[in-house]
Image (cartoon, rainbow, N blue to C red; front, side, top):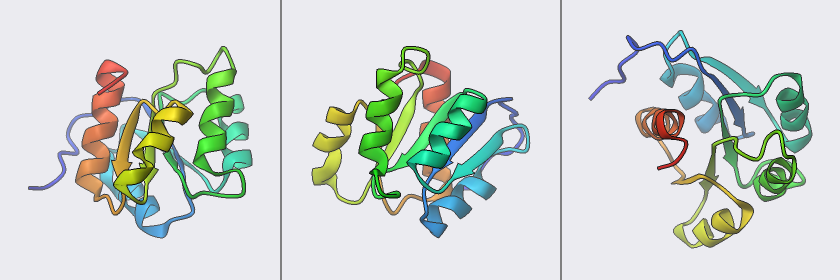
Length: 130
């Protein structure tokens, strides 16, 4: 089953990862009406969030020195960002507990294909939670 690129969301998706597979899935998975912004680590992500609040964030737990855990905690501690839907990507199912403790809205287990990445992200956009 292919990815439906016909529906434009008008959303902005922040993708925080240094994983080339996740970056490519996000780069090519979303429709042309969805703006995808990339950050390699938590510092870049916080700068991108402060410049303009994204509609949703996809955060890799294993990214950068502070990691996804620290980034989500910082986002949740900022009142203007506390409601930002965050999909946290983990390496193992056992890491789901960490994701919940960090305040992730949804959890995805790597490797994750473009179709699943887009499906979960669109569900977050439409409902704020899944």
